[in-house]
Image (cartoon, rainbow, N blue to C red):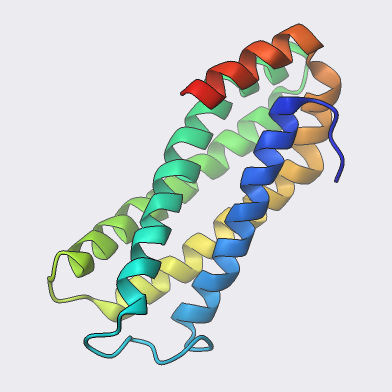
Length: 164
């Protein structure tokens, strides 16, 4: 997709990176990328788990907070409150899955006894929900945002988001 404004392009790029990671999440947790649960001493597992935790911290925390604070109120003011409301509901649902998944990942990385089945269920649900949400934002939110913002507002939003 081709977006004209920096803010829309940045959010789209983050969605693309997230979707790529979610493809990996599905491969890992279904065993298509190797044995799951990973064998003890698997050197790839900690790097993958840290990457997934980082994505949760960026996508679920920073990205969602930016949209809720700076983007959705503008949608509501422009008459697209239904879209903003739907996306906020989805954020809440995704956070409800992301939080316990992050806790399980942190526990596993800290050397605790992993609950591999619970982690798998949460990871696959997280992947499904966040993937669908990112695609919805790409198709509905970002085109509206691209037409809603003027260049000055776009520069200010992008600058604040990039600095944040």
